[in-house]
Image (cartoon, rainbow, N blue to C red):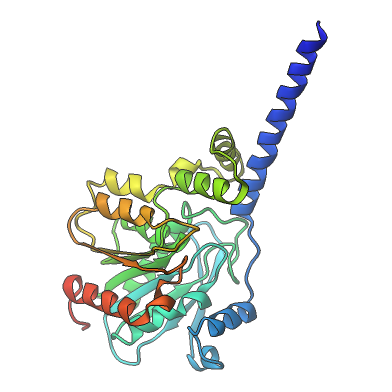
Length: 312
């Protein structure tokens, strides 16, 4: 065989190896991110002025453990509003986070007469689990939390969900399941995991989507049982005819460089019926509530007033 053929074959083999290595690194990053500690989470939220020093202990969270559908122990907590209510907001944190990071949203709801239910995703915080699945399995865990909240309140329960980043995508995926939550607030969600992975690969590594993202999607399937295309709030909302029966508020910062706000614009355009959109000028990823606290609270409360009514 001529030498030039051997050279071409060697080059092709090296190229394939490079694609495989990048694909494996992408999947490893998505599935096995480091866990944030309670102390680190508290320090970060104090720095962002979402918690005051000592406030985390003073909140008197009612912690407990619930089992996921596939047997993992999930750390959960109630933050009660201090009076009888049939209303609950289940608060859902983002990628590599834990529920201390989303207490800022829980406090919005308790001030409005809702109890808040928080939990650490599988493989996050202090919950068990071997991998993060970007919403694919987390949506089923969330559905269990919604059922738990409804059982806690009994007849007349009114249970909504509020999620940030990966949690924003997760609450949208749960809204497409039965029975859906009574309302949804999705803060800086991705519309489609394939699209988001391609965007981040280019932004962080200056690599084009093909062939790395298709390869990574295959590695993801082999590692975790799902392809990137299986995590697409946009596609699922479209498949449900725009999900007209579920009120959804989309929130996104215009300076978000991790998940561009165009994702929420696409989701908002696909949604039919009861919906609202807040774009916070100049807010970075998951910082809309920090960047514009008064506007954020007013928008959430106006959304609840319009689509959920006054607290019971």
